[in-house]
Length: 78
Image (cartoon, rainbow, N blue to C red; front, side, top):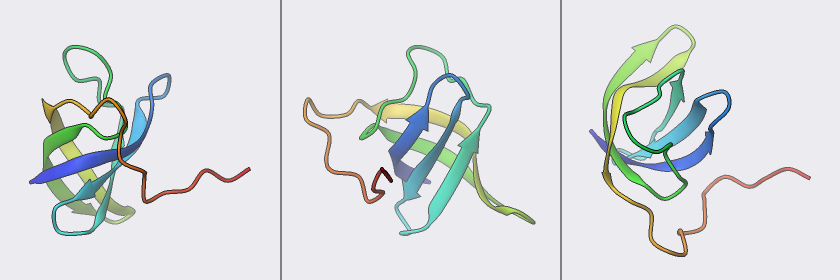
């Protein structure tokens, strides 16, 4: 499935992907080859439904984020 990185914390390798199906997938502990994912990157992944929610496995970047990444659907809480 294709999706877009909406949030990613490099030190913990934890983030969220908005899938092409409109659902939110959690990515945990995945350090893909190359540089860390950035908000706005287009990725492909294997969706998996777990008892704790939707997960994204085997995440791979297919296109980097634009210079000015699109605004995330997630808002940072202050």
